[in-house]
Length: 300
Image 1 (cartoon, rainbow, N blue to C red):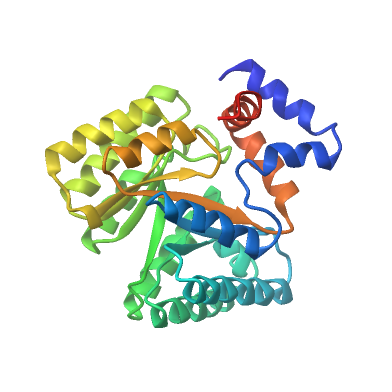
Image 2: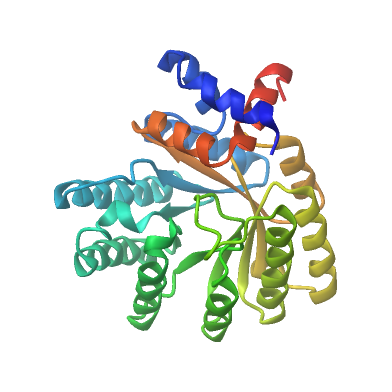
């Protein structure tokens, strides 16, 4: 890890929110859904699609979970109304996973049913290890209930991920493959950069070989090169894979992937809870702070 990135993160927290906002808004659309619409339209004009996420997953009451459900449904309606090339990404804890599993399931199912009515798709994000099993069980239950317009996320740094992938392969699941950003103990998570990369490539190989629909979510040149090699090897159809990148992070690489003829989806979060989200993401992945600082200094 670059020590300078960690210094950037530590320094950001002593500055006024207005200054931090300059960093945050490089990869957060804004506070209002209209900000997300504007950015998605920009992505669409560049032949890229988007995933919209409403910030604010740290909820404590059922009332907040109901508000999150309402906000997610509003996003789906806005996507439909504006004919956006976008889908929705949600975090189960935002819908009450840590309060009551059935309550959360009912909220998520309500969102997926609306998405299905609009011919749209909802991704269940993966959070820290305390929610992994419950999130995967929810995904399986949603699929069993006939809601196939959903996918899940697998983190390559988790030691359990190969077993999870092999189970998901049997369902022909739609999987977003990521490295993982939450701080986990070494007993359950790989810590070395090379071993995380190695597992990512192994899992991607399994998914492509099984003809699962896979979203390759990374900004790592090494992993993107490895993905290119696997795509050439397995020749998946255009609707069986795509690359995904965060808004504002390595836009030059993003544009290159799209120019190379691959589908590219940009993660577009928005909402009033941008500050807490930004600081958490910078802490979990100081390299992102480095990317954003470089973007501010260079204008790229």
